[in-house]
Amino acid sequence: MRLQTTTAQDQKGQREPLSSGCPIVVPKEGFRAVLEEYSEIIEKTVAQMEAELNDETSWDFIGGKDGVKAYTKVDGSLTAAKGVGFLPYHPRVIWDQFIDATKRKLVDHQLALGRKLKTLHPQTHIDYLEYKPIFVVAGRDFCNLVHWRVLPDGTIILVVQSIEDLELCPLKEPKVVRGDLHLACTKKVPNAAYDGAMVTTMVKTDIKGSIQMTISYYPAPTVDISCLVALGNGNDFGVCRLREMDKMNLQDVYNCLRGVSMSSDQGDRNKSMSLLPTWVIRLMRNVFRWLGGTCGVRIPQVGKEPFMFSSCMMTSVGLMGLDMAFSSITLYSQVLMLVNISSILNKAVLVNDKVEVRPMLTLTTTIDHQYANGPEVARMAKILKEFVENPSLLEVIHGA
Image (cartoon, rainbow, N blue to C red; front, side, top):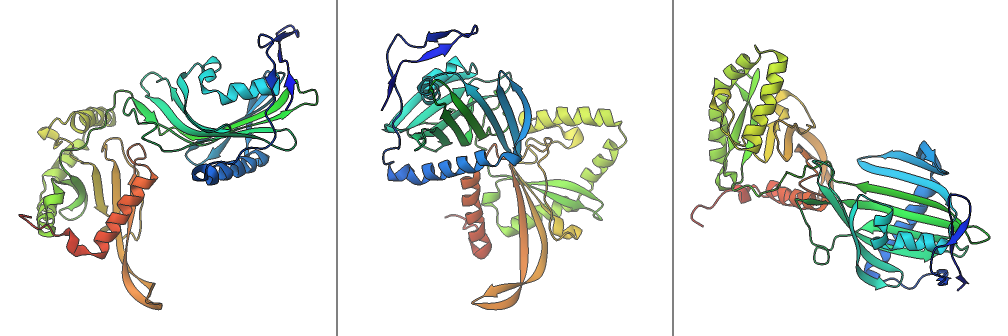
């Protein structure tokens, strides 16, 4: 371990002490054994860091300033950015700035709060970062696992990844939305004089969309589902809202859907709306969406019911002759999930180690990531699979 007094370079090229003469300890090579609970996560994150930083061809250069080059790349729905530059400061000072969450506010004015939640061992801990809201967009916070180590050549690396620990770091939603930091890393390569370092830092995060501060999430009082139903001869569509569907049996669902499909009221309204100018329709659509979908106001003149599209909307694209289809969520409907029921097709499947032809039905689902994450969707899919495999579970036992 080496002791060195740290200095910084001012704008005139002069070097001034960064501390009050206190010696700064250079991090020691290697790292202590990590807790088994987090060791696999950390090693995977380190490997991912090496892969991301070494794959220079996938990054697009976007600009530079003060000797620091900035890069970005398309990585699905994730926001990915990278910066590379030489910092003329003692490597330990650079390391101390990155490792201490409380000091991040000095360089990141958008940060509202940064603190250490728990120390796992001297080189691994859990941090909490909370960022300020921007205008109508809610703030974001992160619960991160932080680990650092020194490589044999003296390079200092720091890797960060979000973890879920609601007991240690409870949610503050809806005012603050919990983000997901897939990977953040910093690689510092000191120069020979150990008075500067080439620093590469990268972040890849999912900020969970753009959610307004004024939005609050409330559980729906009833389990309602809407269905797009073909009207009359099938040239138009209407909406059938199945209220309290968890209390309905299959016959009740059928009667409700058939009643709407035989009605011509919705089709007549659609024809009347088509006579209006486009700009009027657009304005009315936005107003009615806010009144009916957000405020729960009934507008019978245009057939707008309170929350008429419910939390989930279903449609059978198989009746239109489509084997499979995907739908996008529209702002007007304000639903959380869309389900498309495709055509029933005979396909070869493996049954008891034998190939048999069975009728197969494909369901495609679009889910708003603001309301459900991957694990929640996986649990829902598992429950849906149980109902499909055991249709008798759908029958309600009245009086139970």
